[in-house]
Length: 158
Image (cartoon, rainbow, N blue to C red; front, side, top):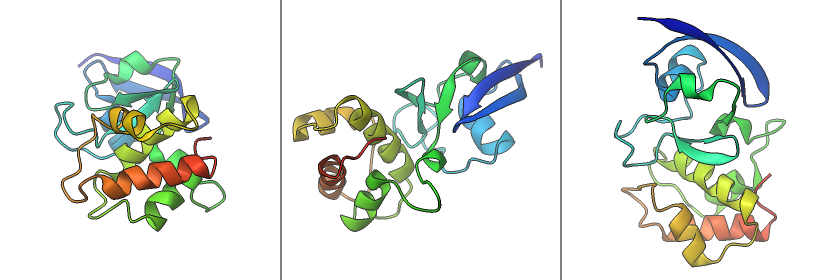
């Protein structure tokens, strides 16, 4: 398998990594960089568990070739906490019980983070649309929506 060296920023840190041409961003993050907050769900772009932010936009890492991220800025859920403290959005998910099993939570949080950065005061319909590609099998979404609303009220996205 042919490899190339990528130069990109991950969670604020410049990285250079040798990756195969067919390496998925999800695999690079989890296996090479040890950033296991990004979850492998469906492997087909249907569940959103692998959502990360690439150059400010939510991206499904299970459908993204790592090579496409050369020169990009990639953020995972690990980037949101600062100084051992959860971000406002992470805290809102915790306080509003926006998780059950927690498997979908990192992807939900990253999709919501991208939303709040672009729209700090979204209405419920906008939140539902932004999270439409993220599936949860446990919560029924009510608490997730409430968590995003609470984070927005608290000044949510970075």
